[in-house]
Amino acid sequence: MNQVRVGIIGVGNMGSAHAHCIYSGNIEGLKLGALCDISPARQQYCREAYPGVPVYACLEDMLQVGNLDAAIVAVPHPSHSDIAMQVLKHDMHVLVEKPIDVTLSKARALCDFADTTDKKFAVMLNWRTHPLFRKAKEIIQSGQLGELKRSVWIITNWYRTQYYYDSGTWRATWKGEGGGVLLNQAPHNLDLWQWMCGMPEAVQCNCAVGRYHRIEVEDEATILTRYANGATGAFLTSTGEAPGTNRLEIDGDLGKLLLENGTLKWWKLKMPEREFCFTSKESFVQIPYDYYEETDTSEPEKAHPAILQNWTNAILHGEALISPGRDALNELAISNAAYLSQWTGNGWIELPPDAELFDKLLGEKIAQSALKDTEENTEGRTDYSKRWQVNW
Image (spheres, helix red, strand yellow):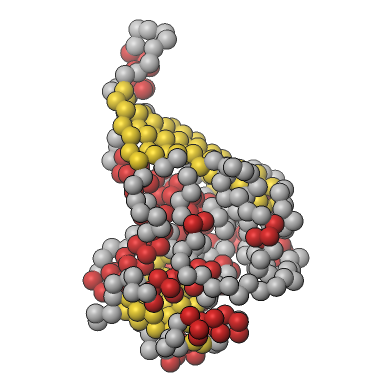
């Protein structure tokens, strides 16, 4: 095989951006082979925007007769695992938009099934390609920051208007989306947080439902974490603050990292803090350090194409996946645990969380949820929106 024929399932904002990227020939070895959407308006858009590409209203028809090697799943979150499972059962490679699913139980089942196949299964965790986050991960995991003490991520520049939430029937509903800022905007941050700092042992959370918008899910959340070595973490996110902040600080025994405004700052101590604390003969003194700084010089929005190219290369040449499917379970475990904490009195939830209890409580919310009555957005995208980039 020297070319991968891919179908896109769900041609909304993300699906149409991927379609344009692939149709334009931006991904070497990847060809747009089919498009599928249940909306007649979206089907018409696809026929006009991508002449010569077969368009399907029925997923099973596309999988049966589409002559495809792979598929991209870009439908609303609650259907991610179900549709990805169908793709794998048709002996096709699959890439799923983030989050991998709404519930850890369904996501685990998908990963377990994928492990029984020889297909390349990835999730669109595109922020993993960003050079500053990759550099921070390298510093931490090489031991140059020493044992971690604390991490704090303030990520409140996910600002959204009421118009945004009203733009789709499924948005900001338990039934249609399965959650709010933790499930829609923040999965990238939650993934990077654990990707760099490791998984916590326990999570405690306070979510504010509809604090800034007329929605039934959270638009603000504060997560506290506890790690095996005694380290702690805090994660603060919101879609109702302006201008908002994106600031990540990670402290270790050998110094500190700070990522903000497109710059990675690194204070590298010349002696471990714990050693200095108990050997110094002075009361008020600063530990000597070296200072390094690295600025983001990457081209705008290369992250989605980078994941698409990596997935294609994995299929064609065996390249290691940047964001394999099973990796996506970690950030989902954190957000599921955060919701459980909120729903059960804001206490500490050990990881991994109780998936059965989560499914039960989420089911109760879904039973009381309803999709909104709103006009369908039929506008097609031709590129990747700035809102999907790392916003400093």
